[in-house]
Image (cartoon, rainbow, N blue to C red; front, side, top):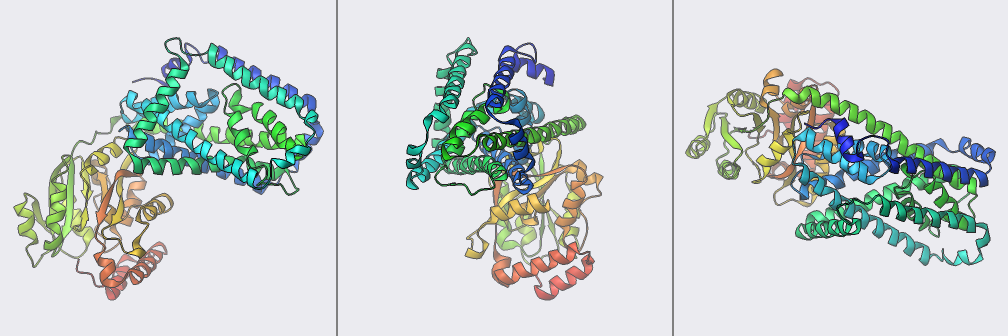
Length: 567
C-alpha cells in the first residue's frame, strides 16, 4: 500500500520543494509586485473592506457547488473506465483533489493525487483510475469552450465588442504586455518541464482521442457528462461574477462583458503561479479595464476569488484528514463477496416470478430468501420452484418479515428487496463496488418506475434529493447493508411502519450510506391503485408526522385507514 509521502514523491520527484513550484511562487510574487506598483493599495483595501458580504458568501457557496459538479463529472468518467465506486466517494476525493490542486499548483497534480488516493482507498486498478483523468479533462474542456462560445455570442449580440472601439488602448497596453509575457512563460515552462519519455503534445492528443472515443461509445453517458461539465463551468464563472458584484456597487454591463469572465478564468488556469494568483489579477485588470472597471475593483474581485479557492482547499484538507482516519478504521472490515437477498411477500404470485428471474441473472447473489406472510396464492410454490429458501413469518409488518429473513441470511451483504422491484444484471457488481468503500455500511440503488406515468417522472432526481438532503434510502430502492453491521445494530427494526427510515437512521450512526451505480425498475401499481396524487399526499403526511415524533403504531393506524394495502 502506497503511503502519502511516497505518493507525493512519485508526483514531485524526490521532494516537496521542486523547481517548477519555486518558479510558480516566484511568478506569483513578481506579478503581485507589478500589480501593487500600479494599483493604489489604500483604495484596494477600502474596496475590500466595503465589499458586500452576501455576495462573497454566495461565491463561497457557488464554488462548493462547482466542486460537487466536478466530482459528479469525474464519477461519470470513472464509470466509463469501469473503476467507479459510488458518486459520494468521487465527490469526497474531488475535494481532496482540490486541496492538492492548490498545493501542487495545477490540475495535473490534483488529478494524480486524487487518482492515487482513490485507487488506494477503494482497491481499484490504478491504471484504470488514472485513465479517467484525461476523459474528465476533455469533458471540462468541452464545457469550457461551449460556455465561452456562448458568452462571446452574447457579447457580440449585444454590441459588447463595439464599445471597445472607444477604449484608449494606451491605458491597458502595459497590462497586455504582462499577459503576453505570462503566456510566453507558460509555453517555456511547458517545454522545459515536459516528460523526457514522451512529447507532451503527443500525450495531450492521445488523451483527447481516447476520451473522445469513450464518449462516442457511450452516447447517453456522454451527453450527461457534457451537461454536467457545462453546469460546472457556469458555476465556476459565477464565482468570479459574484465577487465582482461584491466590490462593484455600480451596475455592470454583464451581457456586453460576458466574454471576459471565461477568459480571465481560463488564463488563471495556466500552471505558472500559485493557484492562479497574480495571473488572475493581471487578466482581470486587463480585460475588465476595457469596460471602464477601475483597477482596484478588478484586483479585489480576483483576490476574493483566490480566497474562496483557498477556503475550499482548507475544506479539502479537512476531508483528507477525516478520510484517512476513516480508512484506517476500516482496514479490518471484511470484504463483501456474496449477497443474500431477502424478499417479503404476501400473495405475490403475479410479480414474484419475474423478480426471481432477474435475480438469477446476477452472479454475485448467493442465496434468495422469500419471507412469506401466509399467502393464499402460489407464492410459496413459485419461490420453491426456483430454488429459493422460503421462511414463514407473521404478516404483522414488512419490518418483521425483513427481520426474520435477515436473521437467516449467510451472505456478506443483505439486500432487502420488494417483490415488485426488479434488479438489472449489473446490480450485484455495483453493490460490491459500492461496499468496497469500507466507510460505507449500507445504501440502495437509483430507481425508476415501470411504464412511468407523467406524475411519477423524475424518480432519479427524487432519489438524489431523498438521499442528499434527508440521508435515507426508500424501501423500493432495494436497500442493502453489510451483514455484520446489521447484526451489530440488532437486525432490521421490527416496527409496524417506516422500517427503512428507522434502519437508515441506525446505519448512519455506524458509517456512510451510498447509492450504488445501478438503476432498479419498480412497479407503480400502488400509485395506480390508490391514485398518484392521493398517494403522494398520504406519504407526505405520514413522513411529516413521523418526523414530529408520532408513535409508529398510530402512523400505521392512519396509513391503513386510508389505503389498506394488500401487503
